[in-house]
Image (cartoon, rainbow, N blue to C red; front, side, top):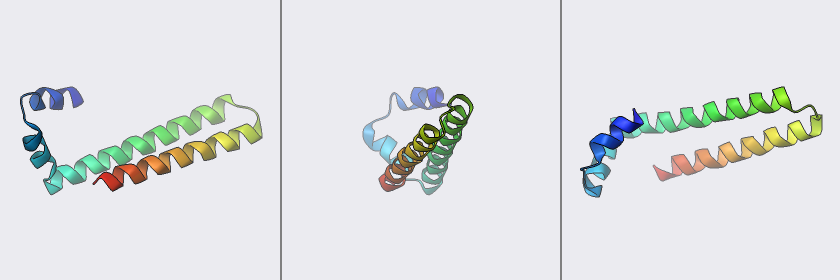
Length: 81
């Protein structure tokens, strides 16, 4: 899907792409997609840490660190809109 979007956007100017993303429906769907990607990466990283790291303190630290990174990324994503 991303490749298809890149194909269709390759001949568009910056202004045309910006106008496309100003549509509320596109804005909302893109925001949902970005938040879903962040949630998916959070769950995946936590699963890997829980499955492969046995040291309890390191596991807790890494999960909290990932939560902090995901939270910061979500703030940036929402702040961009």
